[in-house]
Image (cartoon, rainbow, N blue to C red):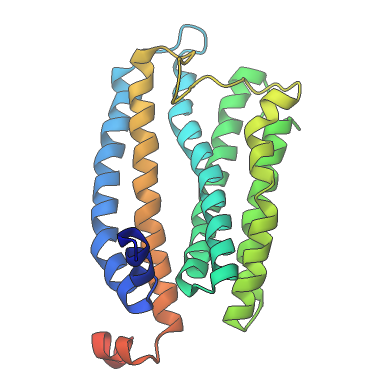
Length: 249
């Protein structure tokens, strides 16, 4: 068997995943904290004010990483849900369900920071712009997955129902991403490109890229911790849990 496939197969074991999550969650949080500190320093102190928007443009350093995470996490949630439904890998189901609250928080941060940025830029806190509206729909989808998962007592039935909603809801992700291209919208077009030239000056991009990476590591740490908790809750009566943690688990 391919070594990568073997690793995934082994990590999919509840006992092995518990050890994996316990080992790597703390380093992920630590690395995220260091990168966030560097990124925030650069965003607030090292980068000059924008010649048009002044200091209000600095909201971008919160808004853009959060927006990218809101989309990325939903895609991860949908992929993990599909794997769970097709191959019956329970850990993938738990990763999907653990991702939903994290994605909801990033989506809420995106909407709130966008409203704060929109007030001085557009003169209003909210407008039913296609990008904003589809991002709001994304938040409702996250909340729907969370609510559905917690509304059904049977954990496996709840996981399957919520996973199905995540797979269906992922169609909204390209709508959010391409809304500024497909429709006439107040929201500005693509400014930052990871591949190819960006419209933003290079001296202003580096803190943003650092914060983008920091949010990725924060998500990794968060999803490992949350999935580990869900895993222990569902496996609490299994022998490996009793051997590892005793009756306290």
